[in-house]
Length: 268
Image 1 (tube, one colour):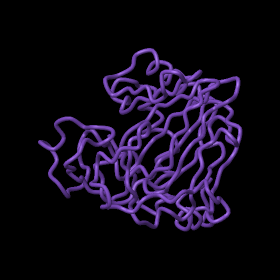
Image 2 (cartoon, one colour; image 1 turned 90 degrees about the horizontal axis):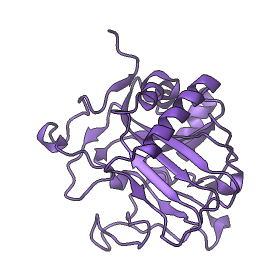
Image 3 (tube, one colour; image 1 turned 90 degrees about the vertical axis):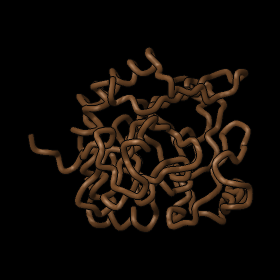
Image 4 (spheres, helix red, strand yellow; image 1 turned 180 degrees about the vertical axis):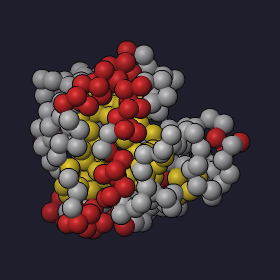
């Protein structure tokens, strides 16, 4: 599924699509896990759309601990091996899962952002965005190819655009990518169930609303490269890992039960 040209494309662009990354049985397993999460939200769950939105944008995080179906896909599917290959790495450690759905007719757009400034991670990481439904191109995420090469951009809250993590002016702002899209290399794809968009934690991306007659159900799986290090932040990370700073020092590898080695598969 991943050849040298795909690895080169990921290094250059910070985003690639892998078709058919999960098979039918794996998709059925993942769908069961997804439904469990929606039926039993955790304390991390977020209603990310406004109250007057005709649809609904729901998110939840780090559910593999209590959802065996998500754990199975995260650790035992082809995803971690693909993640390691694309990072040109000998291993991939699982960071966390992100369950999200935009119901039919959802207006809420996900603004342009990078993921890494919200995380407690220094070093390289990769996400695998896997839909459970057909996603027309106009309802699929958009990616600014090459933006993973830096710099870090100011993270802001999605609904009111407040800078709650870094002081105003301390990081570069994301340019107005929508004002003249021809100035930027923006990628977007039609996606089918089981396809995966792999993208760097630093790739600038966004997602439109979903003005279609079916939901857009997605699980993202996030993996860390061997050079990733725990970064103790003075702000609330998304997601949070309560108590982790008492167990994992700043600047050390993520060798911790919360972040299991996913590739190569551990023996025993």
